[in-house]
Length: 367
Ligand SMILES: *Cc1c(COP(=O)(O)O)cnc(C)c1O
Image 1: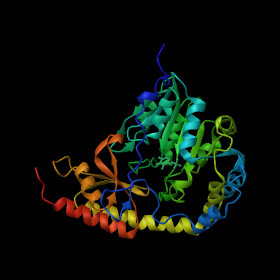
Image 2 (image 1 turned 90 degrees about the vertical axis):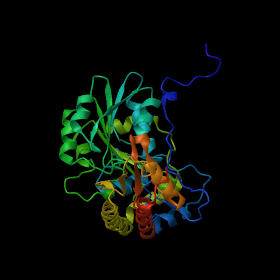
Image 3 (image 1 turned 180 degrees about the vertical axis):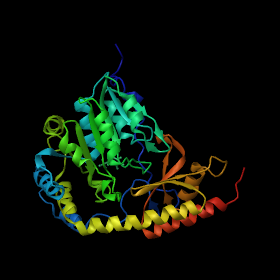
Image 4 (image 1 turned 120 degrees about the vertical axis):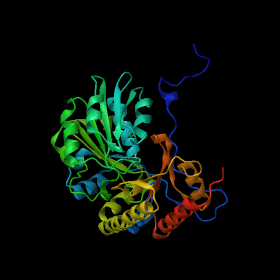
């Protein structure tokens, strides 16, 4: 008998998720470009709805009915097929707990979002990693990793931290190759940013199959990361399973109120999208012109690759930028030790990053 309580197998294998930094020592003004938050902030209407929420002594509506109706009418979905969560992270964890346990396998891709790995291990399952090709998801590698123990395949589309996406034809090919008992989770946290004709977030597959779920978030283009709000849509039987295990009041009242206003403020979302389109293209071009490699991104961030040379690597660049108040994200935990992820920021922040990178690349290297 152990002398003290022992966590279940798998728990101590988890490397706790490390959020993007938000401070730099000794630097007065910082630009946080490390967690893919929108530089435009939330819709003023969402902020007002949040501030107008009173009666904090009362429990919120545990089914978030009005929010599910607002989401349903925006996307043409049956609100009964929607579940809201405290961020989509919670929904990813709930799906994992509902469908995967000890001895079961969950598949995600080489540079895929790390929350999947944490959820699988926390549920006592076995993480299985499918190789990518040049920071792109390889559908054949995922299909080759499927065994009779596979329960869930997680696909972030677009993926974080690479910013690449899987065209809809390929998502359909992936789905067609999966056994019917495997749940395909399409994590579309950045769907609103994608401007590609061959992209589809997942609604069509959810509507036409019994084993596909799509998750979405209010943390990115809607600018409500601090409130923790996400949603999923899926077949009735999956919605039923998730509703049985979620906390009865998992979404708070201010989040419900702000979420409703946010989905209805289409002008604000359009402004955030227009800002991103302009500055994603500008940043990509300017950073490539400095001689660095940038993975082509369709999201609101981009992955910058540094040469593995003394004094010029990602770690050096990170220290140089942080000292100037520019906080990017190191991604070594994602198998990308020589890359940094940059969130598209305000015009001021974007210009400062490019100028600082130029300075970094010219600075003498001290051995
Ligand atoms: C940011 C992000 C999410 C959203 O998480 P929330 O819990 O909704 O804040 C989900 N998936 C990916 C891939 C992300 O990058």
